[in-house]
Length: 310
Image (tube, helix red, strand yellow):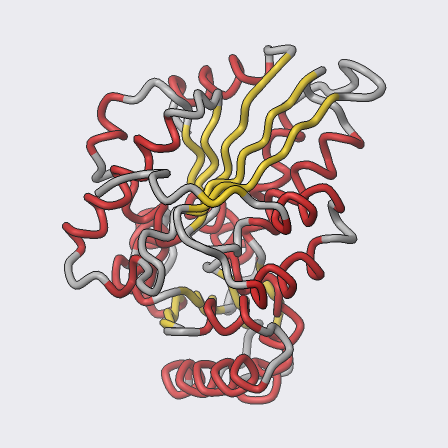
C-alpha cells in the first residue's frame, strides 16, 4: 500500500463518525460485512458508523462473468462505482476478487479521492506469507472465471519472488451462485468435487503442504467442504487461506478503538437486482450468529433498480 493510500486510511480512522461501503457482485462479501459490524461493537473505532453493503450485481440473471469482454465488465463496474460514490462513503471495501481485478482500469480509480481497499491485495499477501514460511509448499488459488482469467494473484506473487510452478489456479464457474442458493446442497458438493479434481490433475503429486486460497468471497461459506475435497483428491497436508478474514481485520489492526462504550451502528443492504428469497434465507442463516443486524439488513434489503446505470 502506497503512502497516499495509507494516509487515506489514517484519515478515516481519525474520524468520530464514518461511512463505510462494502461491495461485492452478489452476497459473498456479506461475510466480511458481518464481521466488520461485529468487530465494531467489540472494538469501537467510531462513535457513529454507517455501513452500506452495495450489491453490484448488474442484471437480474447476468453477472459480470457473463459479459463477453473485459472492457464491458470494466465499464459496468465503473458505473457501479459512481453509484457507490452517491452514498458519500469515507472508505470503499471491494469484497470481491472479480471486481478487485477490474478496479485499477476503471475511470473512477483515476480521479476518485475515496480510499479503496481491494481484497486481491489481502489474498496475495496472505498467500505470499504462507509460501515463504513453508518452503516446498504450493498454493492453489480458487476463484471465478474472471478472477482466474485476469491472473492477478499469480502475477503479483511472481513479482514478489514466488516461483510460478508453486502457484496453481483453478476457475470454479457457477460455484458462487450455487453457494448462495444452498451452501450444503448437492450442486455445491458436485461442483466442489469437480473443480478440486481438475486442480488435482494440474498439481500432480506434491510432498509439501498445499495452501488452498479461497479467492472468491463466497467460498469462505464452504471452507470446510473445500478442505475436505482437497484432502481427498490431492494431499492430506492442506491448509485453507481465507482472505475474507484478513480484510475484515484490517481496520481494527490499525485503529485504536475504544472511542466509546456503545457505538451507534447503522447498516443497510442495497441492490440493483431483486434478491431471491432462497438466497436471502440461505445467507442470512450463515451470518446471523456473527452479526444479527447484518442478517436482518439483508432480509430487509432495499431494492433500487436505478442503483447504477450502464
